[in-house]
Image (cartoon, rainbow, N blue to C red; front, side, top):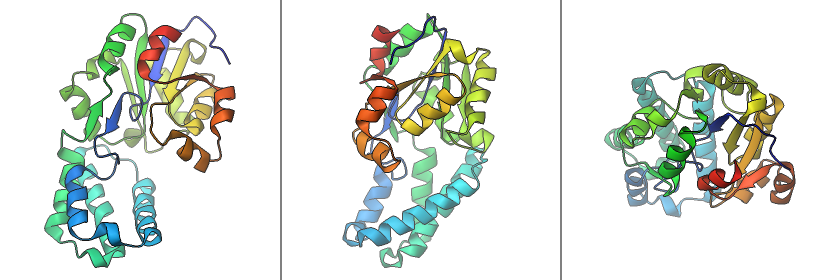
Length: 246
């Protein structure tokens, strides 16, 4: 598949596109992992752990209209409480649950930028309109500003402010309206095939980024296979490849 030119606008996902979780898990910061490990988390049955996290995730998804960091904290406090209730063997204390939620919401050490993120944004921002389309929570805005990449973007479409996730077409429509561009002149970079299909459904050209370590496994769980995605979408290995592609 080839891109159609001209391209005047670029929409970017955040996770596994520009940044990554330092702990390897978006929901478990290093402090949270340390607390869990101290309580024997690694010895728990895998299926029981999976059930606990799946149930807690359903709680987050059920009410995703989260406009403040304060509500984000309360949501993640409940998220970890649900996990604790379903894994009573851990015997987590209320103070420990507080620390886990605080680390998730208020820590500035959760994410790391890929080593080519800044130079790529610096280059692209001089030639294209840039926007973000991300499934995320309010605190990420503070993180983007603290790490000096917020100013490269002219629009932000965050799921938490809208109350729905990709690939809901309203996410992409909001992004197009916010940036003031047409889908035909736009591209969207994401690591998840379902999100790329959502962008394509409104006319935005999708670009698949392969920087995520377990990328093929997660896409396969969603019913997509690596070779199929390669045939369907233009792909890049890392964000700096955009400078050569466009």
